[in-house]
Length: 311
Figure 1 (tube, rainbow, N blue to C red):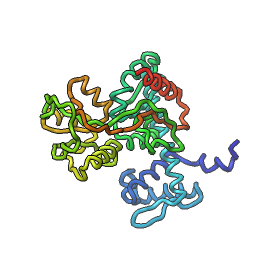
Figure 2 (figure 1 turned 90 degrees about the vertical axis):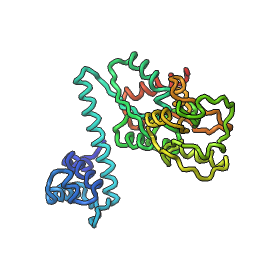
Figure 3 (figure 1 turned 120 degrees about the vertical axis):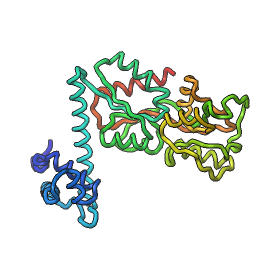
Figure 4 (figure 1 turned 45 degrees about the vertical axis):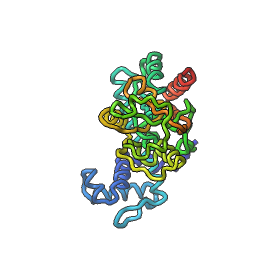
């Protein structure tokens, strides 16, 4: 049971306190934060002082730019959680107003969109027509940020170290590889070559994912193994539509997950280059917050897992 004095300060806490504090942390100065909140600097200072009085200790170190104290870091975590819950509830209330009783917010990398999510989602909504879905597609790091601030309920992506955090649960859906692809603008489009050596492609026009993504890391490792120590891509993009458009228009070599490539091959928009080496991507899975109490999340995770096993 929660003791009364533990809740006393929280009862006086207002959403405006938390909203103002997040804006201040992002803006870095009281002046800029006040401008973003459409209030005077003195009013912004008042909200901060009021919040610090409630908590009972300093939350920021004042200087040219404010810095969070250890207590400030904790309050920021609380603010992200509360504001995220409010935003989610607002969207769910909108769904209820439309006659729907639940809303799932799903994020995915290319591989998930190509291989498991579409068919699973069609079957899931046929079984649970009252659940509406919001879908977003981004690099995995950005999706995990959305999961942390509760903008997303679950994400599908690479199960590397980023997914193995104490506050997260996950399930493996399938294993994936990194492949090289070409479009109709490539000299390889009508090629009959059975094997293409990675080392022979150093001087081609490459379209690569951004640095730091798992796909790019695995590709760079394979290039080093092939004796290519330096390669400057012509284009870097995380957008599948940009990759598709450029490869149809010019002689480019693209990089993407095998799951997405196979999907594009079925559509007739890409061809996978038969490389002399396999570039492993790793397991792709579904990730969600341990503390979620959403029945819709539980149901979709189970359905997604079942669907992946049937493929």
